[in-house]
Image 1 (spheres, rainbow, N blue to C red):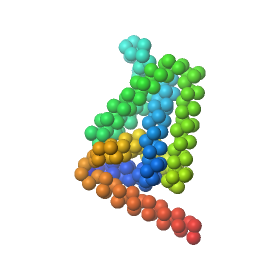
Image 2: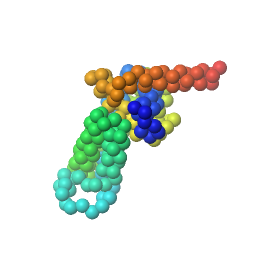
Image 3: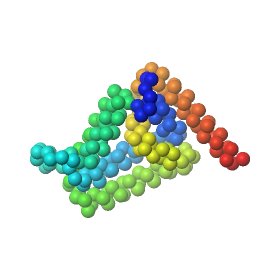
Image 4: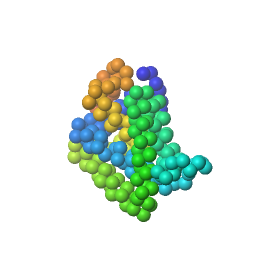
Length: 197
């Protein structure tokens, strides 16, 4: 509570939540956001190592490359936003890195990029349908690409934790965020109404 700028979870959550208020669209994102993260890491497996390491883990495809760096940045950012859910998200990020590395090594680049392309097309299509048909609002990435990509995996995880366990990063979080989301949606609807009139 009381964090500002990059580490203001309420601000991030309210921004992303204003584009994801429809329950069906949220469910679609819960299903598709993490597979997009995972398959992105498959492609990043084929980047060069960041530094020389012992042969440890190479049999399993574990290489400290840009895939690892990508997953580590996400993991550290999520822990900095909220220790409890962030720790779980960080473990999930590192699990995705390890799993995607093992899968990428087994597939090889010539098959891996085809699998990634098919999965990404399927997942992104699902999300755009969620926005067009159910949310009736363009995705957040059209307004803030970095924030949308950075927050999407954590947003869906927090939504899931809230729905299943009533989890809040701190008392009053969801009440405050819901109020901000309502205000952002009203502002968007007012702007949209002015454009149409």
